[in-house]
Length: 246
Image (cartoon, rainbow, N blue to C red):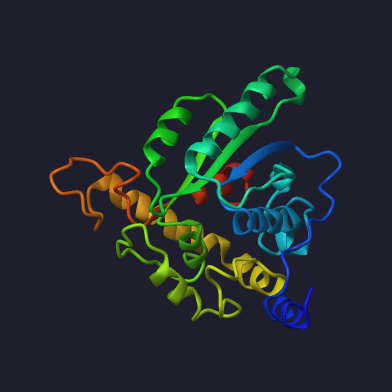
């Protein structure tokens, strides 16, 4: 590695290192994400912070139901699309169904974004109705979920991340976050963790607006918002709810 590249890496920081999960987790989850870095860093952050019942959990009155483990793929391609995520999740679910009941995953999660992808609807349809599969779909992207840790934002993004990255760059620790710097470093994790409840509240509020017909999304003559119409939105709060965090 050249000196310039080493310097750039030091400036940006490194992804979080996964700490050993609890030996006897109450529940074991599996997650496949579209991105190769940010989503998995975030899941690592959650596992490090909550699954060991550390001081942060105690401070925020989280109960022992937070004892969990999140298994993730070892191979994490950098160009995953929603349909490919769906395929991998369904393969994990098929393998999981062959295990003894006591060794199966509690839930299997697919994390993917709207971005400018053309296969989102097909991926959602393929996963719909599966008894154990859950979807955390973010529109326009997972980065919107990160921004909700700081403020509510309800301006449609049309599948683009530029504005979200601009807003995130104004928050502590996220200067330079974007296409070339997608990691969640320890400094960024320290900023995100105390704001998790806020992020969930913001995401839920956007979801409730759709349910009540009071959202600002461009529905036209449609009577209801579908996932692709809910711009911006994210289902990440549902995953945290399942983990017992929110």
